[in-house]
Image (cartoon, rainbow, N blue to C red; front, side, top):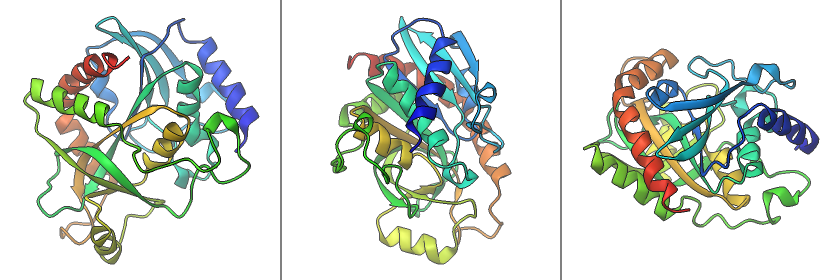
Length: 276
């Protein structure tokens, strides 16, 4: 991994953000950007000003960094993410986590829009990630070891922090938003999965599938941060419906759930901040 690029890009971002000590970091996935509406934004940074292709070209990813303040808590939010399948290596994928650690952020919430594998799950369901399956065929920690990312062989037996998962449950209860729990499988993309591949993932214990989140979870956990994951089930995975899969359906499902997300995120910030 190109650590000098990460260092320089991180320094440029932090330089343009207001001085603060964020107590939480959030990465917003496809279609999640409007979930910030109503929160106080104290600073913005446009990722397109950085060299090295850190921006996603995928619809629903605005490519901005924001500092928001809620209930006296500062939160750094990456609005949109770069994906491994976009072909620029791990550095743009790792950048949000790198910046968060540089800012001393103790906890991170990773969000995405995924496909439902579990038979009873439907578009619009919100799923707290309890564990994951890395079916991408790659790992962001491959390469020369760097102490920034922790030890050479990090333990991955408990990536998703139980206290942060509890904070998500409490936020859902306060707002009467039902929350599911499950295992998220990440594939490399950019093609959607075949019905046979979904059958394999189902047998492996996966409840949802997508093309993100797992790399950031691996990096953040290895770097010593608490990690939570939240997946919006935007469509049914291959083989569960007759209509072909399309990214427009993902964005449409996200827009429908935005009113719930606008309630959920502030409540989660309050609960997560109490962890210190």
